[in-house]
Image 1 (cartoon, helix red, strand yellow):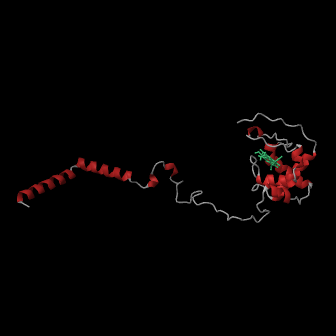
Image 2 (cartoon, protein in one colour; image 1 turned 90 degrees about the vertical axis):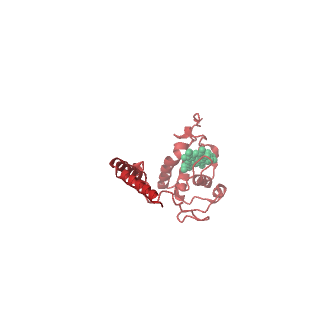
Length: 201
Ligand code: HEC
């Protein structure tokens, strides 16, 4: 390096140092550094702050898939092997007695679960019937009176195309209590036929 080039280099360095020491410039550098720190702050301070604690390291709901039962698994209490409605119609027989307690229990279950659709009298005029796309069946007509116990039992367990299933909401004894209560309702003289409300769609 020639002496003149060396001198020029030294001059340049001196000028850079002087500019860095200039108080105004120094303040600007500090501000820029502070901004950089703010932009790269830890995600815990990120917006919106209200859900910082919500997104914790804890396991989130359904993050891990729920346990899937191996095929063919049977419940250990009051469970029944999988059966079609036809099989239940033929094979399922009531072993309970229509005692006042069982009928009272069946009545309560009927009012809580079935009456909103099928109506208190069973004719299909329940309080929510007008909201349904498909009207609930009349359980008091001659067809329903002839249905075998096992069919009603199976219908409660598995539901229909439009009717919900109660396989997980009632156990076997509870379903039979409801069947006995429906049978008791059907012994009464047929209530006037309900012609139906306009269906709301
Ligand atoms: C959400 C309304 C709804 C509820 C609740 C409901 N059902 Fe039904 N049910 C229906 C509809 C609709 C049908 C017509 C067939 C279908 O959907 O498969 C039906 C059909 C039936 C049938 C078949 C009747 C036939 O002549 O074939 C039986 C029996 C029956 N329900 C009994 C019950 C009992 C007992 C309960 C209570 C445990 C109940 N249902 C609860 C809507 C309901």
